[in-house]
Image (tube, rainbow, N blue to C red; front, side, top):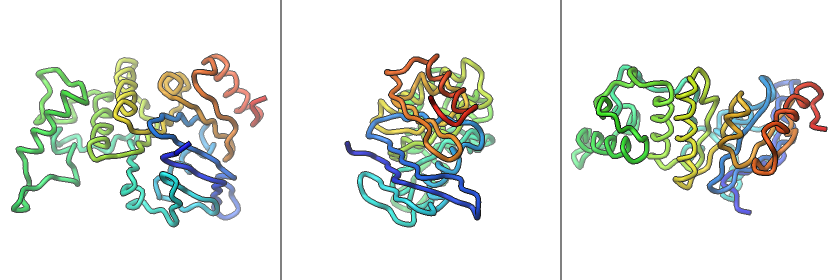
Length: 251
């Protein structure tokens, strides 16, 4: 199988603390993988290695079958990795179009900001990708007026617009209402419909189960289990998660 991302025997230590040990992790083409585990299990460290923030102590990282040495944050972005954090990293006092193109503004042939094009592109994205049909929201709307789910949607669509191949969703449902969470899940499904891949990290097993093709459970810095979602019921998955939290083992 061709993987968009593969980690082979990746370990990470901080002094004498072993944060990750012999992690083997794959993300396929057009696949959503859920990453589950308690606080301190190693999820954040794993994501920081994928995004180039941390260098692994040992092991290999491959993108589309090509080994990448000394992965950095800029290099990861060049390879198509984008992260949507729970904080959303949006400029809430700015308009929607400014947020979409923040730091990657479009310019015209004279090198000046092409504001009309950015507004037009934002309007197109609103209707085709974000599903914003309300007349109360337009490219000049201020992001602070959006719901939590809509803000997450903006961050996801921004990543897709700039050709992200792998979108890391870091606890995206944190602080969202049930309605906002449902909207967010739709946005996550849109990632797959766009032919991209995602790693969906969340504390809520139900949210991950409802959208992921495959679920990876991490515990105490190791991969504790891996499941094809369609082959396991939610009840069984939750039982296994409880068992892992208590014993460190699935069985």
